[in-house]
Image 1: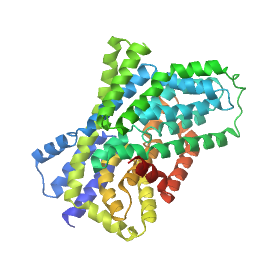
Image 2 (image 1 turned 120 degrees about the horizontal axis):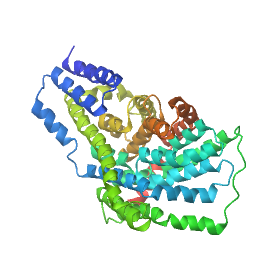
Image 3 (image 1 turned 90 degrees about the horizontal axis):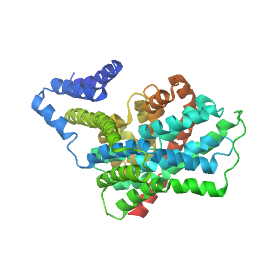
Length: 431
């Protein structure tokens, strides 16, 4: 058996074995990369250390900690709550209205935080108790909130797009633009799915519709929150700042609004916000560092060529190739979180897609969308764990409730495979 074959076995079997032990994913990637270096007879501790540093030594990756900080400030400073209050004022009186509130809030919050986990935590803490109190089934409510949170990595700004863009050298601004229409389609798909779920649901009568004055008052209270995505997207489109600088602007804006406009956060509380953001950032950055070690060894072992050989016959049929790749990524998403999926597999799969004539930005959107669906796919399902933890309900309950919405997302992904113009046309229009 050649060294390359041994390296492939070490990578695949080693990752599965280490994941089964519950080991931190970043450390598992480092150990897997070290094992591959050993069988390739390329063992060098200095080289491993250099790759660890190179994995996080990137200016665009600076966007990650600042988007995480912006999400923490939004949740602590009342920005997320005002978005939810505004959505409730407009559609809360409709039958099943709190579900539509959750969908509307998910779309709006997605345009601010860029993180599925931040959105899931905010909506689980605020909306889930309200839905319970009003007689909504716990499983369907939790499943809808989990599914809505998945829109976070798709509608810009998106941390997942930043990581994908850095990893594959794809335009982050173009990736941001590519996510707008699919994100809105996901929101519309959730509305259809929620209406279907409501058919057999017995609910108490909803509250009376609020007077128009109250609706506009609630919208006015959310004005500063709604201005945030306008500043971020408008600034990037006009060239005032880059996506990385946009993350800094988002964090600074959220801090100013929380401190001086809403006044729901005091100066001493900022320390706790910074600590929470730093902990989350450390997890993501260590993943990036570990993935760089594994990625370097994957390149040395020429594993991309092996994958190209397997998928090579499909290069002449781009749609069939995309279908097969999406199926593979769905299976991967059941075991890996979004960030390591991007870091490990995007650099391997993108060259094959480009060889087949698939637009790299379109492939990036599909890759992130597929990985985002993995956030609500058991057994890993990070978002499912967040909703279950914050809502204090069992994991099987959330899994049972998310299934109809998961099917909706799979159908949307199939739609985008058949009609890639839905993604590529807005990107070409914005250039």
